[in-house]
Length: 212
Image 1 (spheres, rainbow, N blue to C red):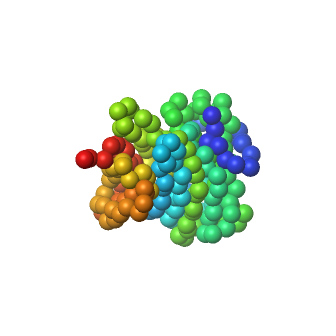
Image 2: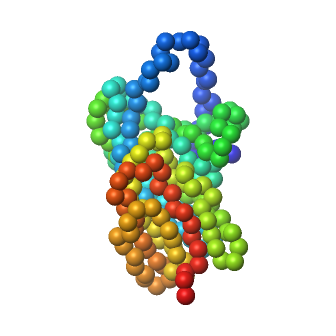
Image 3: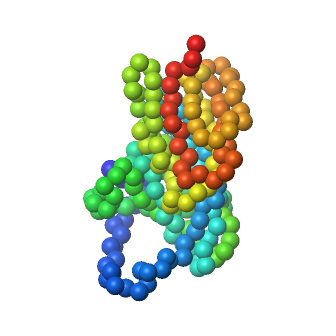
């Protein structure tokens, strides 16, 4: 199904045709924007549902842009987006066309701003999203089914990541980077992980039983 977006439309995007002999294909096109940092604050509930807020720092390319393309797993519901603190429209692709173009478990969606973002400038995009991306392997052990795109993600480029997780205290969580926080309050455990260098994706590998 689509990346579900509350209260917004879906759109079927045209597929452009091109000749493989087109000279323009011999050189890479300039990027519309590049994501440099992801800051994610996620709550993993006992029922395996995940609620998260993802902040993405981007730098625009050589031309102004109004439409930004992101990917997320089909099991992720993007409920809202803001750009530099202002609400932005989120459009999901038509389901059948998307599935034909993307045979994997990911879905492309678009963020549209009212005023074009100027070329060569920095901006902050904040997403609110939910989804059932954690699966149970049995015997009290859990793992992340959507390892790469459990959060809105732009392209395959490397970026710094800071991940903060809130989850039941009886579980343990493994994520990339250095753990800078590990605390427990009541039945909730919180850990924070920061990558010392840019990574391609900010996956958390598994949620499993705490060691006793």
